[in-house]
Image (cartoon, rainbow, N blue to C red):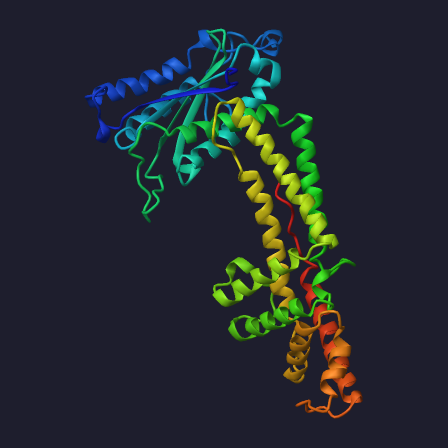
Length: 426
């Protein structure tokens, strides 16, 4: 088995309230924490770049070999100020320490190291801390340093909680994280994110992301009334139309605020939520349609992205695969569709006799090949009918009234999308 491209090891210095057999006294904890800053900032282990050489910066800059949350190198004064902060943090919070190392020349040959340091500070580490269960990044303090005193470039990273910031599964209140040893799945997440960063500019990932975004935009058109292929206005599927009518009625009865755009996730009523999801499932389950085929292409692209992240995990000897990107794309599309359904349904009201809807629904279930008007004509004009209508003229008039009302509702619905500012998550 080949060696992993990213290796992460971790240790910790316990808080005063969490002393162990290695750190038995508060003085040991204090000294270990203060020495950590001096070790990280050691100038002899700092990476120098050609730009520093030509600019004459080497040996003259005031910046130390340690980077804070903003992605910038810290000064001696800033480090001293941070030491004072950590003297307080260690009373209640563990100091988590990691070493992130790479094969010889791997980092130098694949990334712009200075850019990587900034992105590590601003993007990768915050994601990692979230994965570790820390709620608010603003309540975390962290710093890291790149050392070049070995053949393998490696980062030293440490972090701590400024205040209780750890979210336990069954607790409403934030607490300090008691466990000092990080779980393997948390370390694997960091390894995979770094490996993904190194590889993401390569053609395979960027092309997959571009393709997936294009497929999402195509699928959105089916649910946008401004588009020609807007399918919620398709009256050929009476079963789905009947459910949309029912949903509109429920929204009219259950919602407090009217005549404004609905956000599906804000709906609390279970019957409305379940019916909306059912309509969505029915729409996407109709095979041999353009929507179905386009949706299959979208799912295939997500599978390809999943294979990409699986391969990254495999290279790092990790069982955990990062599926956050896939989930975000699927969630975005789901929310767009669900929002479109409820907003269309709230204006799709039929106030004429219920017998029309009931008759069509009942007869359609018997013979799905017949169209809406044929069903109405046959059912409502038959000798054993129980309709209030007595002639084909009245039936046609009723249908015309319904269609006029639906057309007006569609115009009102289209207005909701004029200010639509939704965009695909990048």
